[in-house]
Structure formats: C-alpha cells, structure tokens
Image (cartoon, rainbow, N blue to C red; front, side, top):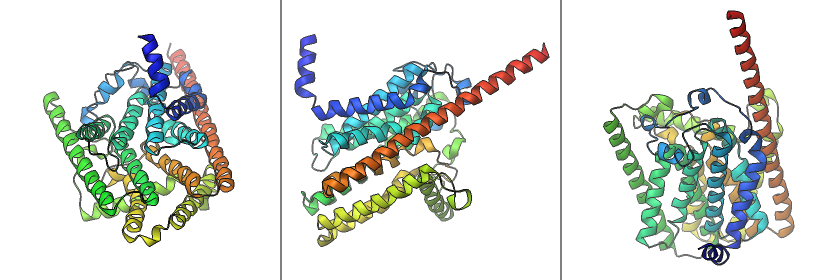
Length: 406
C-alpha cells in the first residue's frame, strides 16, 4: 500500500501542484507561526475555549462539521496547521485552474493566499479559522469543477455541492468563488480559444449554478433552524437578509465603493497621511490597470466586440462580487476577514503579467509583488505582537483586581 501511494504521488500529482502546496503551506507557516505557537486570545476566544461551532442561527449550518475535523477546542497549533492545509489546497486548485507552470507565478499565488490581511484577521478567530479556510478551498473547487467546456454532470454537481457547503461554513467565501470565476473568465476571453457561443453558454451556466446553489443553501438553513427551534441571529444583518429596497441598494452601492477602497488604503490618507501599505497598494492598482490594458491590446480584444464587452463587464463586476452580501441585507458590515477574495486581483495581475508582458518588465513587477507579500507578512506579525501586548496587559489588570479584592 505504501509503495502504491508513493507511485501515485510521483505519477499522478503534478509538479506544479506539489510546488503550489509547499509554497502556500510554508509561506503561511513562516508568516503566522508566531500566532500558532503563542496564546493570543481575543474577546471571542474567551467564549470559544471549547465550542461546538453550531452557528446555524447565523447561516453557518455546516461550520460545526467543518471545524470538527480538528477539534472543538481552541488549539492554536492544530487549528493553524489545518488552516494552512486548506490554504495550500486552494493554491493547488488555482494553479490548476489557470494552468500555471512558472515557479515565480506559483510562488506569488501561494504567497498572496497565505499572507493577505484577511487571513491574518481570520487567525485572530483561530478557533474557527480551519473551517473558514475549508470554505475558501470549497469555493475554489466549485470554480475548478465548472470551467468552460465542462459537460460532465458529476463535475457540475460537485461544483454545486461545493458552493452550497462553502456558504454553509461562512457566507463571505461565496465572494471568493465569484471573483475567482470572473478572473478565470477574463483570462479565457483574452486567450480567445473558444467560440462566442461557448463563452455565453458558460456565463448562463454560472448564473444557474450559483442561483440554484444559493436556493439550496437557503432551504437547508431554514430547515436547520426549524429542526433546532431557533431564529436567525441579528448579527451583521443576518436576520434581515432579503429585505431589500431601492434605498438600501443605493446605500449598499455607496458602501461597496467605500469598503473596496478601504481594502487598498488603511484610512483616509488625505487626512491622516500615507502608510507603506497604502503606497504599495496604490502602486499595485496602477500596475493592475496597466496590465489589463496591455493584455487587451496585445490580445486584440478590442477587435472582438462580444468578448471585449464581456471582459469589461467582468472587470466592473469584481467589486460587486467581492462585496456581494452588502446587496443582500441592509445591516451587513464587511470586515477584513470577509475580503479574502480581493487577493485574487493580485494573482490575476501576476498571471497576466507573465502571459502578456515582456519578461524584463514582468520580472520587475514580480519583484514588486513579492515586496507586497513580504510587507503583508510583517504587518501580520505586528498585529500579533499588539494582540500579545493587549493580552498581557489585560491579564495583569485582572490579577491586580483580584489581588485588591482579596
């Protein structure tokens, strides 16, 4: 049996998959090991030293099963390793989806997935982080199983189940699937290897896939609450899902712009000044737009009206997809841990640079993107250090209060 597994590993597992898994796992370990090997509890951690993670009232009816693969205890090292495993699986799926072969591109993919600020904040809630990272992997699996030209019903059914379970763990990772699908579609439009009919057929199937998946997710959620005799939680607008008016849609659109900008800028830098994070991300946005324009010109996308229109529509749809739940409930508030889908823009830019830009320029851009990954890692450790100091200060105050009482 052991020899069979070794043979399978060497013959069936592609070199690019192995590289993607290793890069994402060990980059994540280097960046987040401080959190995994120290006790850095937050407010929610105090209530989740042990918890079944039954969050059906918040729409996360599959979270208990997802977290059950590790344990229901807050075990930083164990939960951290399980989380890194699912991040690495996500990297493998994305590398396979885009058919990446360049080691530099694979490194950037794993690096951004493991270092993005959304992952860092998720590890602040590490008692449930492994479940959330599983949701991200399921989102990527759903996209990978529903590529253009995929006609096998088993694959499409697997995509459907993956999206349903992804939302059943944490609804925010629906955005990861949507943005990944849009990024994939944009690369396919640039390559122009399909007919217009195939592109439209895929777009229609995606609408049906996500529509039926959301309907199934909603029905299962209602059944789970009915069986348990509970009501939807008021937390972050969960109880108000579906109560949409024209006014709430307009407010959601304004909030979408603000939230999307805040991903790249920590605060209003005109008022409070620039940070390294903001400067790097402003430069990245310029790089991203320049790369998209270059790819469109070199692929002669402007000469194909339908494909060009679909490409521009997909690009415009990315912010909406990344923050889609703002349009589902007037009370939804996006936090950093809900914005992991935005890291796919960095991966898309790296992919297009490698495909459509001259090697000298793409290598320089890859170095710049590596600097962003490095800075994300440094920022993560600064965050963990602050959490550690807050914990020690709170602990010291608690001891002093107890001493005075005695």
